[in-house]
Image (cartoon, rainbow, N blue to C red; front, side):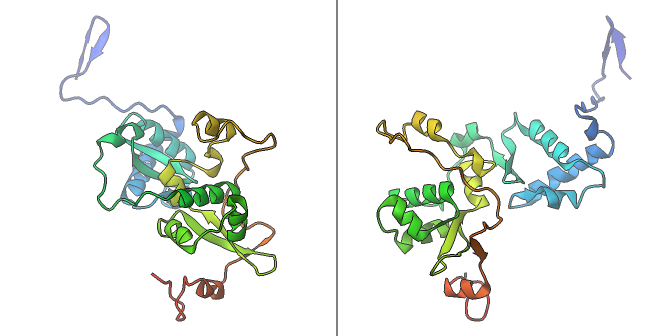
Length: 244
């Protein structure tokens, strides 16, 4: 055991100091819950939902408190625990990105047209192709949307309840993960865009940044996409299997 010197208790070399528990919810079973949650997120290739974690923890455990504790513990490390649209994942600390070798298979840089379309979808979703073209003032090629779909950043949401039932588009969780946002409400606003030099000084007086729709729930003027719709869009083969 250790000994007292000048009123201070000193540990011997073979003794390990017990971890400090900052949150009462972490005591007892909570400590084991932290380890389980950490293992679940670490073992998953995709961001893990709080519901998935809760199903595998002892009853009565506050999952949000567990994840907040883990996030705090990892904050000063080279790997951080981040929340993406209610899901959790480990990611390299942002300030260390320069030290990570870029993957040779890195996604190609988006064209200006693709960036414009992605921004419109992010801020105006749910939005149709015709509405995107109306905002941009030019036609949007299918190739531009294909690039965004293949990157996994844009998805089909539903069908608009208007003549022709056009498909509505929205962003994905992968998009939030890629740009480092927890939710769509974290998208930069007007003042932030001005500060970043992304908006010119000649902005119309009535110009405003739309508030993006959050969540996956369809709006009142949207119908869900059916299997027949998927076949029509070329996302399913006639046999009913997803088209790779």
